[in-house]
Image (cartoon, rainbow, N blue to C red; front, top):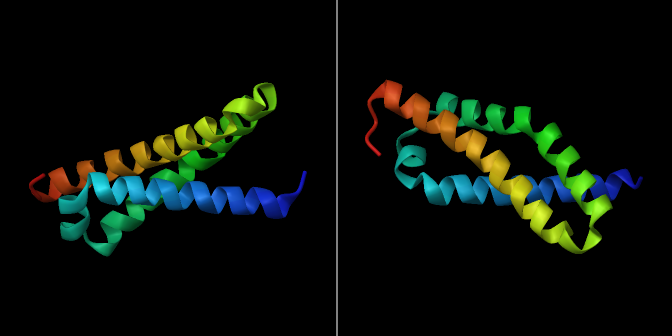
Amino acid sequence: MNLENLDSLGSKIAYAAMTIMVRTCRIEVAAASNADVEAALASMRARARVAVDQLLDDAQGAPWIAETAAQAAAFELAEAGIATLRERCAIAGTAR
């Protein structure tokens, strides 16, 4: 397995997940502290291994859906970040 390509894929998925999270949670991101954003990113990193493993399994079994599988991985990571960010903002009293 080419690790350089895997790193590139991981970076692209992470960028897509961050874009989804920021566009979905504009208000929360604007009001979030650095600690809130770091917590959201930590949630995304925690879910990354499972999401990428699922992506690789899907792409190996059905190569024609690799792009869709990558998008699904990005959404899964974004979901983890969004949930954490919204939870922390709700605790802090930041309106959505």
